[in-house]
Amino acid sequence: MASTEIELHGHIIDSLVLPRVWGAIEDAGARFRVREMRVGQSENETSYARIEVIADTQARLDELMSELLQLGATPAAARDAATAPVTQPGVLPDDFYSTTNLPTQVRVAGRWVDVENIEMDVAIAVDLAAGRAYARPMHEAALGEEVVIGYTGVRVEPLERARAHREAFGFMQSPVSSERAKALAITEVAETMRATRARGGKILFVLGPAVVHTAARQHVADLIRRGYIQVIFGGNAIVAHDVEAAMFGTSLGINLKTGEPVEHGHRNHLRAINAVRACGSLDEARKRGLLGDGIVAAALEHHVELVLAGSIRDDGPMPGVITDSVQAQGRMRQAVRGVEVAVMAASMLHAIATGNLLPATVRCVAVDINPAVVTKIADRGTAQAMGLVTDVELFLGALAAALADGAAKAEKG
Image (cartoon, rainbow, N blue to C red; front, side, top):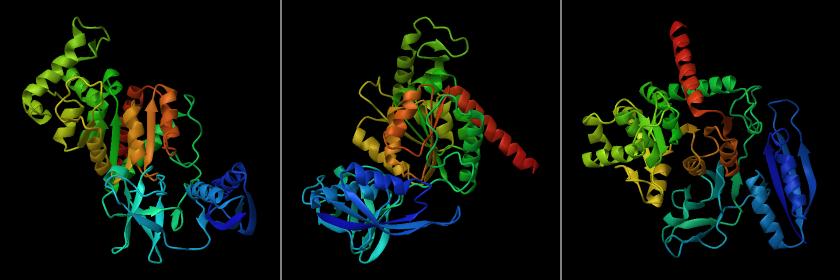
């Protein structure tokens, strides 16, 4: 038999940390003994538990401890994190610790330090001399770099249920449903965006081409001009169809005003791409008046960071689209620094990729007419996302209106 003791701190009961830990132990065929327990007696008072975990073998215990760590448990015996050097560039040591997107600390030289730029499914590199730790993607692992191995000296802070009685982005959201009260949710998203900008925080929008297809592009452009968007992620299609709309008034050959197909309209997006490629850049196309007053024009005018990650099916592509996926991932990784709110509108591929790069503390809202898309974003690791199943044009229109109403009330007040 092998055993070790773990500790749990915080709101471990109402946030379901304690029962999840017990469930994981039982599911693994192991046993536990509660050695000490203190239960908070009020909504704001925290609880504490010290639990002995017992497994048949050390190997099973180690495997179980790796899972318990992700749930917020920490070994009762405080020891520094174990590390091993990278011996081959881009290859991690055996038994490297794989992160979640939850706030994480490692113990270095007897003190706990935050892991910088935390995201899911990467390693943790440690600068022992500087006493720093930071998330390190596998392909960026450098020769000689010290990487955390095992689970000793690592602790994860689990998401907890919001203390407020009504919190749009609170832990343990209700299941994705088209029946959700959208007006209230949109109002709370607007309030969160307004508060974020008031303190200088960044807001990220991840946009799919349906934003243009549904004629919602003017809502996005309006939000950019009013300072509510600092970063935009998307692919080749969102730019191609935004420029198509500016040049021809169509999206995928459909007239955006009448909803009727235009003769030979199927080639309009190719004509738009070709015209911008002739200019050499999106900025030059804007100077020549090809971009109208849509999303790309507003983004360039207001210096919004635009990261466009291409895919295998792209036409053209448009100038500015990054066709190397690893390079695109690196650009996205840099751009999410400082982002506090992320709105993912009518996007699945880019939304899931973005969610994988974001810390769990970033407030996310995923909007799509297809409930399967919203569910998949949460299932792929972005569990903190609020899911809204609705038409993206209706959502963005209502969001822009809510922000305008809030600004008007603030001016009167």
